[in-house]
Length: 222
Image 1 (cartoon, rainbow, N blue to C red):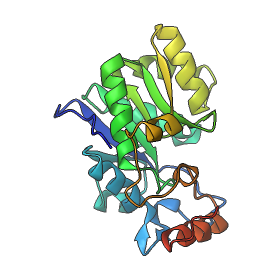
Image 2 (cartoon, one colour; image 1 turned 90 degrees about the horizontal axis):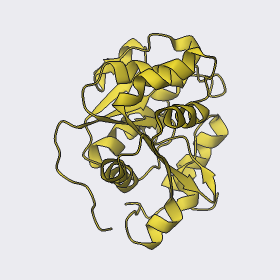
Image 3 (cartoon, rainbow, N blue to C red; image 1 turned 60 degrees about the vertical axis):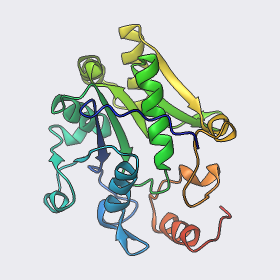
Image 4 (tube, helix red, strand yellow; image 1 turned 30 degrees about the vertical axis):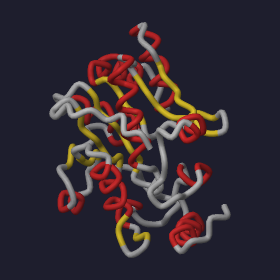
């Protein structure tokens, strides 16, 4: 991979979104273990390898052992409320949000999304795979917080729709980057050599967790 990341300390912060109910998993996903380590630790490691200072958007007290926690001020409204809360507490001009249940996102993808957001000035930058946009990871210009809160309290709680509406309202770019093209261009790669089809696996159930353990063991068929 040709590293696009620039040294701009202080203009970027990362957040792991870890405030969900985890009802399908049966226990808090943040502390479910994959390969012997909590999913929360895996997510923070992705940010660390990408060179991004990591914090947590959530409200469960044990999380503070792993990284600074920004409490979700309106947890009943889902992850979009957590994003808005985090943006209110941050001073850097860009924030990247990563879901706690996606342990196979490559750090190089985080780096490239940040590079694109910085270079183009896009309001929102996120990836797509096989023609389908992925909501996370996403890079958001922190100046978008007012727009996002307005969309949230108008009744839109879905993150992807809210990102689009906020970008449209601000008349700024909403960028979706096909990861297949980035891989072909040598801009993005997975350190464990996992194929792109595995990167966006969300661990919502115990079955998903078993699948992820198989991937860690070297079984790449999903």
